[in-house]
Each structure stands twice: as structure tokens, then as C-alpha cells.
Length: 506
View 1: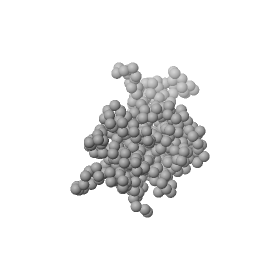
View 2: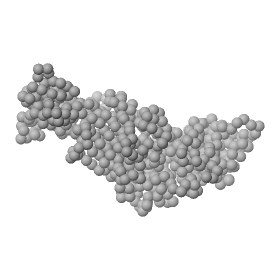
View 3: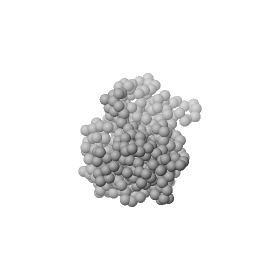
View 4: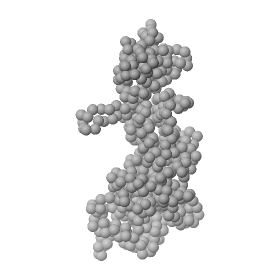
């Protein structure tokens, strides 16, 4: 391999120091970029009897790429009133060096007047990028450096998300989907592009074109029909009443659309199947809704699967809801630098598809790179649930979120009783429900014991197993959904809860 290229990072020395260091560490530890780049930071130079301006300008002369980080400060000004940062930019421009410019923040009014002028000067000459925090900067730099390597022929192939989608043209993208994304990115992250930005300009800014053709990431993000080009990008959702995969599947949906639509549809599927409690309007006009699984944790798990899956695989993301847990399977393995144990500790973000991950971040589908699994653990434990589990299995990455045990106990107790021929194992909720039904009780009265709100789910998951066991019966068996329907304890049910030793609970 030829000698490494030098990436010169320029910024005001007293500002964005952590960001400069983070970029250098990322480039030097990334398996791909470290093969091609060395990074120059002025603060890494040893002391020497040389003029400072002569050193940094000579390094600009020597570098392959110039990377400018522009913040609010303008920095030290020489006798001409020009800072080293601007001198470096001008020198790189005069020498025709490839320049990558990243502007920190979206509030230009907070910048020094000369820095505002420098930002405008750079914007008149090239496409500049804005970033809000270090993970966003790292993702953008990674995309730009990979593009540079591909354009200069250093890479024989580009990452899958960056390569052109065969047969796709700009006509296969939806201007409406792009505009909705830009509205959200602007409101959520202060993204610089206006919602009316033309398609070609927006895709160029987001690094979603490959020689003028939509990349795979562009199709997955904004395609009118992404699955026409990438059939396995569909998402499958299944709901099982028990704790095992079994057929027939009570509820099975296959969703299609952009990655944003897939996440939204899968999240709606899960939230519509789990328990929820609606509070009062005492604190405001909107009544609060609490789900048995934290909504944000479910969303994070689904986004993880969609954003980090292997899109070259013929498998699809699967979301499976069981009586005791939610499992989300996505094709692909963790990067070599990460292990399952790492996910339970602070760790670096290493997106498989950075061009997909970055728009998800801008639209606030991803909160902070590298913290998603930690957020899931915190949200679940805060809700009194077991910590989520993560595992690799046969080329699939699996996330498991555990539900409250009452529903699973009912399903498992009914199953165990049927299989063993005994009817003595009862969950705590089953005992309370049977006791309430001793003289007959309406469905709503029984639902209140477990704080349930979904009649159909409660009938299928809790009442039906008790009827199948012979412990409960309907007062109107010919009209199972009648508003006058009640449920009462049978003789077998009385023996189950009033036997010699009382009920055995699980």
C-alpha cells in the first residue's frame, strides 16, 4: 500500500480541542481509515525553535486533506488582523487542497464577526457541514473521508450504504419524504437545510449520491418504494400469546416503506399490543399514557435493529412480542471492536451504515450515538423491569426486553396445567381473578385487578386459559362478547383456590 495521506485538522486552538482529539482518535482506530490516514494536530508537536506560523503553514503545504472545524471564536489576530485558522484555510485554498469544513452549531449570531465572515467565505467555495456534537461530527467526517478514498481510487469498493443503488434514479425518491425529514431535522437538531431545498442539493449535503446516482442509503431513507430495490429491507412483526414461537401466529404483519416508516410502524405495532395505563388530566390538557414497556426503550431497540442491520443479507428485521418479553432480531453481527458485554458499559458508536444513521440522528430517532443500549437498560430498570439482554446467535443480533410477569405467569400456568394434567399451579393474578368471580363478575371488574385496558387481549390471554382449564365459565356462553356477559367460578375453580392447602401460586 502507498504511503498514508495526512489529514490536517485546523481550528482555534482554545476551542473544540475535545472534538479535534476525538476525530484523530477515531481515524487512528478505525480499521479502514487508519490504513490510509495520519492526522496532524498542532498541539502534538514537540517544542522547537521555530516560528509557530511557519510550522502550521508548512504542515498545510505537506498535508493531503485540510479539515476545518469552525466554532464561535476567531482566535489570535496577527498584525493584519487575520487568525491562524483563516491563514490555514486560505493556504489550503491557494494550493488546491481538498477541504472539508464543519461548522459547530446553528446559531451564527453567537459567532465572532470575523468567524461569521470566514464561514460565509468557505460556504461560497464549497459545501460546508454543520454539527451539533462529537458523535455527529465523527459520523460526518467518516462519510466524507470514505467518499474521498472512493473518489481518488484508494478504495476499490465503497460501503454498501454509500454505493449507487442499481437501476435507481432521482425519480425513485420522494420529495415529500425528504421535505418531512428536513422539517423534523430543522426543528429537532437545528439542521441547516431548508425544507424546500431541492432534492439533488439535499442529497449532496447528506452524502447520499454516488456519481450523481441515489445511493442505497438514499433509497432506504427517502425512496418511494424502497422494497422494490431492496426486498429484504421490509420489517416483520409477530405477536404470540404464549412464551414460545407457535403457529398459527395470532397477529402477523409485514411492513414496507422507508426506514423512518418502518420504525414508526413497528413501534405502533408493539405499543398497540402491550398494556397501557391512561392517567388523569390533572397536570395538563393531555392525559399521560404509561406503557408496561417504556416507549423510549422499545423505540431505541427498533431503531437499533433498522439502523445497524446488514442490508446485504437476505434476512429481514423481526419484531416478536411474547407474553413475557419483546425480542427484536436483525441480521448482522457486532463490529469486531464491540462485544455484547461492551454494550452494557459506555462504548464508542460504530455504525454499520453511517449514511443511514446520521439522518436518523438528525431526525432525533437516535438520541446520542453510543448510548442507546445504556439508555434502554436505564429506562427498563427505572420502570421496575429486568435489564434488557443482548446476544449474538447465528449471524443475528438479538435484543430482549422483559415484560411484567403477570401476563406471562397466566399463559405459562395454563400451558403447564394442560401439559401435565394438573390444575394446581396458579399465578397471583389468577387467584385474585378467580376469587373476584366467585359470585360472577363483569369483564371490566376482572380487568381492574391487573390494571388492564384492552378487552380483547385480556379475554384471550387471561380469561380464555382459565375457561380452558375449567376454572371459569361464562354466564352467557352463546354470546361471548355480550355487554351483559359475566364470568363465574366453577366447582373446579373453587377447589383450585379453596383446596385443603389453598392454591399453589407461581
